[in-house]
Image (cartoon, one colour):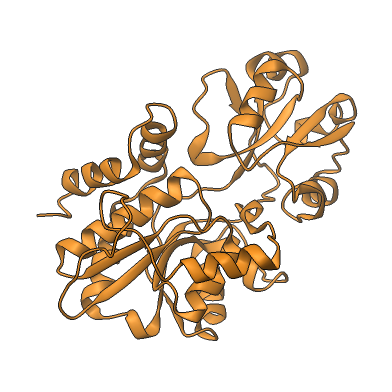
Length: 308
């Protein structure tokens, strides 16, 4: 699961990010300003990590809510879950896209998340309720951590599952996010669940271009990426055959004081339309085609009748 998004930041940055969260950005176009105003509901939309998918989702939420008559501001530069959670709990933001298992584990390191999204949603609802936050309907779209090799490596060493790594991992360099060595869904899980011991674990980035470049250059043989951002046809995603990763369905979380039947209905309608393949395609438009997240979000909403 995408627990790698839970990397810690220093206290000074946390304070700065929370202070800035009250300002936000204007709706739909990413320009700085006060945002639009609406009768009856005014919300600040945040993100849980400064990456393309979170920005696309935040824009979907904001644009659909604006269309429904709400006033919307954006805070799209919250670069870690630790920051965005504090912003949500303190009321600096009102709603953000989240991930069932990752957010549950962020709130409780011992949360018994699994491959069952309904159970994960139940766990998350209990944890968020303590913070006066509601968990809305989760989407069919799942974005989880995946372990990736090149086709050449897969062919040479006969790799198709994560279990297949165990006999050969001692000669491999594994490229992974900064928190991997202490993350139960990364190095710890690979060791305890699969019996995998790599020659070296090299810090790269959070499912991004550094990991991709290292894989293609051969400086690492295995990399951890996100399931909705594996675009390269030369990459093979190894099947998590022992189910190390938990179901990380995308889900909106909202402060109870900001939730209304109208707001909840708008956000739940978006969740109902999101699939894993759709999210992969949307991310590709931003990451590969360099399109603006706001424009990509608007097109999705229009194509799915959510702005009509």
